[in-house]
Image (cartoon, rainbow, N blue to C red; front, side, top):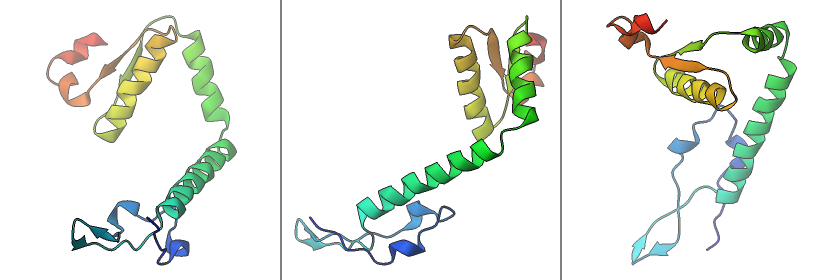
Length: 120
């Protein structure tokens, strides 16, 4: 099945790719249309990821180095705290620290106020 691209150049890294409407050919008698080329979108997503990595590389500085030194000199457990999306990332970060030999745990801020603050 071949897809035609409506305007792939309009896709920027800031675009919400989930909101794009797509068209395909016929599917079980129902006509569906696809306004984007799946390959073009996939390539644009990869370009956005590359752009983000380059930006992260350019912004590495003293803060990153200081955090790395602090974590490497730590003799206790590392407390990782977060809520929402940052909480999901925090859980993964705490798990990564544990898997690399740094004792750590995740503490949800809402739970901290209801008794879990004693973990610290």
